[in-house]
Amino acid sequence: MLRFLFFRLLRAAVTIVMVVSFAFVVLRLSGDPAQIIMGADAPPEAVDAFRAAWGLDQPLWRQYFHYFGAILSGDLGRSMRDGRDAILLVVERIPATLALTLPALAIKLGLGIPAGVYAALHRNSWADRLVMLLAVAGFTVPSFVLGLLLVLLFAVQLGWLPSGGQESWRHGILPMLTLGIGGAAVLARFTRSAMLEVLGQPYIRTASAKGVPWRAVVWGHALPNAAIPTVTIVGFMVGSLIAGAVVVESVFSWPGVGRLLVVAVANRDLAVVQCVLLLVAATMVTANLVVDLLYGLLDPRLRNQPRAAGAH
Amino acid sequence: MSDLTLPAAVPAAPPEPRRSALPPLVIFALGWVALMLGTALLADAISPYATTALDLRNRLSAPIGFGGAWIHPLGTDELGRDVLSRLIASIRMSLLIAFGATIIGAVIGTTLGFLAAHFRGLIEQVVLALVDFSASLPFLILALAVLAFFGNSLALFVCLLGLHAWERYARIARGLAISAGSQGYAAAVRQLGASPWRVYGRHVLPNIASTLIVSMTLAFPEIILLESGLSFLGLGVQPPATSLGSMVGYGREYLTRAPWILLAPATVIVLTTLSVSLLGDWLRDRLDPTLR
Image (cartoon, rainbow over all chains, first blue to last red; front, side, top):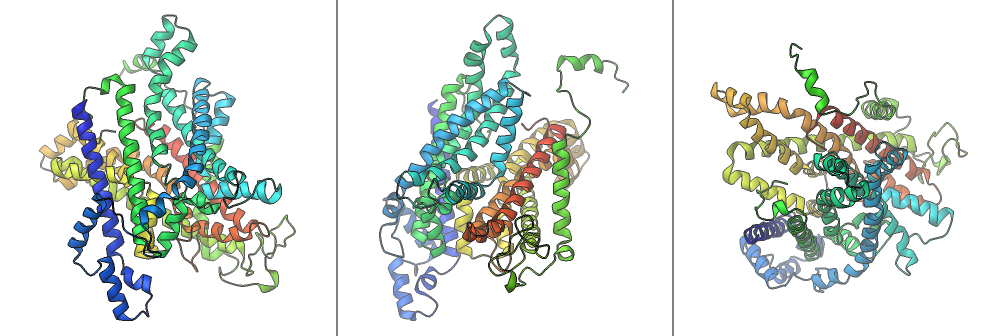
């Protein structure tokens, strides 16, 4: 188990290093930020001063190591627009994003998993067909279309809810629903297929055959086994709590991390984009790590053998 | 056919009853995809107006059925541009991007997967680390960063979307190539002196093609959704070119006054992704028992 943990941590660290390098390469090599921020007709000495101030006049490899060192010491740079610490800018947006994504996660879990299990237990019934149809629809309707349709219905036609902004809790309802419904559909589809696969296993037949009541078979044998693949996708959803609302936040003008990212990208605010990238990667990697540890808890077979690299 | 023991073995693992006729939903999906492909191919011929042609006397006119006239079947936008013509151009653009990106992703992923399977060792570890990296960041975030910083050209946009889902092909190709290597046929061809190119290109690839094709039908709608999402945010296809997503983004401004500008492309996005997904699921059940 320790060995397993060690290798998992190592892979997580390698992934983070790759994300940092990626951010560095993409964001530094793609254009001259000094020209972009200062404008094309800025005086050359002002551009040079800007470069010197941000370290952009150094050789790239030195910028790279400097960048790594700074990140290790917790310094993620300042926003090139208003000079504030990028990390502060990002962190102060996190509560707004979580205020949307946490309730949305509850909707996904609360709707998606029961619907998927029910559909699997009643395979080929009308309920199953309905769940699957809704699940496919939920997957194929992009979030911005769903969001705008909800706005059209509840804000424009019925006038029940506001269409955007963050003034009261009522402003959050439509974005939460938009996020939650789509995710619930994905989760229902996934849970159903995981559950169907488990229900087809011989041990389920054995348990029924030896007289275990069906309810106990489902709760005691089928659900714990179906949980293993489902945990993966739930882990992904937890990992994208921070970054999963980019489009929806833009549709509803919700001042969260996602909107900050879109605006920062449009303005080429390097520090802020890097900061969001790192934060998102760290969240995803942590969530993946937790999922792998949960596998160990859920599946005793995996506890003592380190998984082969990439064998998932 | 000469194997007389086969029928006896079949009942041991009862397969699902296979309907030989096409399910109605699949027929609908096929029809819709054919319609979209036809529209994309014949866009110039069937488009009633140029995408930028203005009709200033008929601005924001409603579609047929909502008080509009046949002159603009799906209505017009704020500048009097014909929504149907723009929709046709958008369909061609979105399909072009999605096809290009799907093929790029499949080629890159399969190649890397084969390289990993062939060389093993360090190269395999590098590929797997790249796979981990891809899987660790939501693609939208990656794409946002790359797009805004490299500026935006159509070629770059297609290549960028091509990176979506490459890791899935890489995983599949690596896994299947490794298992093919332990089966007789690949070893036999290799023993006969075939080059690795020949082994992978002529023997392994055809054997795993059905799995890869199924993956492509699953990635295709995702790429359409990504493209339309990015274009919706104003970071994808740039004007004067138009795609389904950028039409929705434009129509959003006229949500209350002219919802048809938004509803027409939104409907096309939904029906197209739905149809390709349905076809993909159906193909998967048909062709490929290894994917769920």
